[in-house]
Image 1 (cartoon, one colour):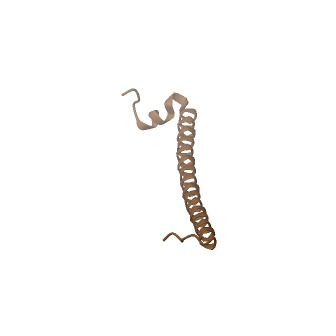
Image 2 (cartoon, rainbow, N blue to C red; image 1 turned 30 degrees about the vertical axis):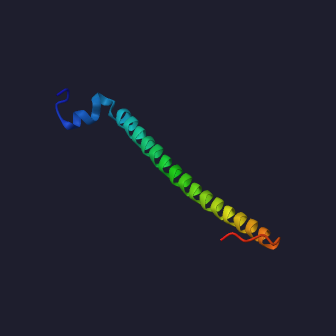
Image 3 (tube, helix red, strand yellow; image 1 turned 120 degrees about the vertical axis):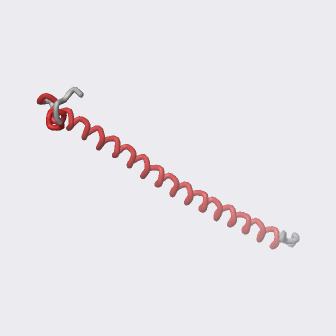
Length: 79
């Protein structure tokens, strides 16, 4: 092993604070990127579900309106 003790490993020959701060900052940023990606995915899926639901409602309304127009003109109504 390159270090005699755990304290020597943590001190890194006097460079420990810089090394561990760099590791800490990297870990925080990686966690932040993963969290942001998960939140964006959740938001996108929610928006897509809303869009599909809204388009289905619009299609149903258009189908209903088209059926009532044909019925009003005396044409047989579709079942």
